[in-house]
Amino acid sequence: MFHTIGLYVLFMGKVFRRPEKWWIFYREMVKEIEKLGLNSIGIVAIISAFTGAVITMQTSYNIENPFLPSYLIGVTARDTILLEFSSTIVALILAGKVGSNIASEIGTMRVTEQIDALEIMGVNSANHLVLPKIVGSMLFNPLLCILSIAVGILGGWMVGLFTGIITTQNYLEGVLYAFVPYYVTYAIIKTVAFAFIITSISAFYGYHVSGGSLEVGQSSTKAVVYSSVNVLLFNVILTQLLLS
Picture 1 (tube, rainbow, N blue to C red):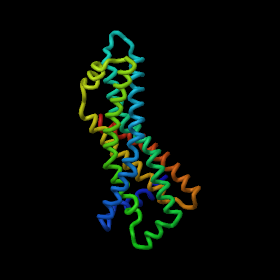
Picture 2: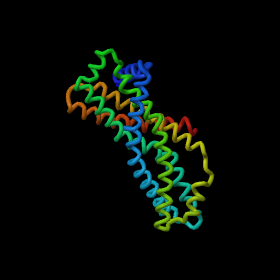
Picture 3: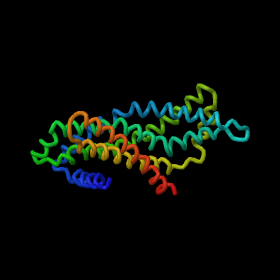
Picture 4: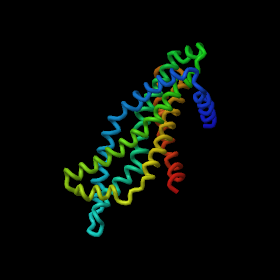
C-alpha cells in the first residue's frame, strides 16, 4: 500500500509541472471536456430523473401520516438530491464510465509504447496526457452536478404530477421550504474533489500498466474499484469538514 501511495505521489509531481506549451494544453483540455464531460450529460440526466422520481415516490409511501404535511416530500427529495445524490452517487457513476475510459486509453498507450515515444521526444508524458483530463473534469463536473440537481428535482415533480401522490403546489412548497444555499456550494465542492480523485487515480493505474491487453483490462477494473472506494472515503471526510 505504501509503495503504491509513494508511486502515486511521485506521479502527481510529474503531472502538475508547468506545461511546456500552453496552447497545446488548452487544446487538449477542450477535447477532454468534450470527451469526459459533454458525453456524460445523457447518462447523468437519465439517472438523475429516475432517481428523483423514485425518491419522491418512496418518501410519499413512507410518510403516510395525517400529522405530517405533504410538503415534506419535496423537502426530503430536495435535500437527498442536494446533499448526497448529485455529488456522491453521480461521482460513482462517473467513476465507472470516465474512470475506465481514462485507464484503458492511457494503458493502451503504455503497452503500445506511445508513452515511451513521447518520453524519447523529451515530452513530459504524465503532464501532457493527464493534466488536461484532471483540469477538464474539475471544471466541467460541477456543471454536471448542477444539471443533476435540476433534473432530479424535475423528475420528482413529474412523478408527482402523473401519479397524483403530491400536488405541484405542495411539492414546490417543499422544495423551497427552509432552503439552505450553502448545500449547493457543499455539493459543488465535493464534486470538484471527486473529479480530481477519479481522473488522477484512473490515470495512475493506466499509466503504470505493464504487459498487454489483459493487463489493460485489469488496470481499468482497478481504476474503477479504487476510485469508487476513495470517493466514498472522502465523502465521509468532506461531510465532516464541511457540515460539522
